[in-house]
Amino acid sequence: MKKVEFSINGKKYEVELENGFALFVIENLNKHNIDSTKNTTIPKLLNAYLLALKENYDNKKKIEELLVEISI
Image (cartoon, rainbow, N blue to C red):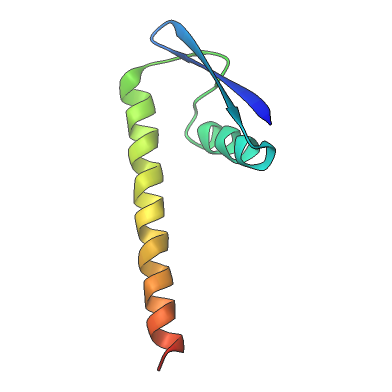
């Protein structure tokens, strides 16, 4: 387990995540120009969250399409 810190609107939060997932989260935050060691505004974090949801949605659709293709 790995601890990941966030500072949101001046308040610090700490979460403990599985090592591989923690690294993925940190990389994703960095990809969206969010430094987990610096203060992050709620709109910036919300935008990153919505982009992650969009990516998840797109991946789900691709998986569904591939399942249809291989079942033919």
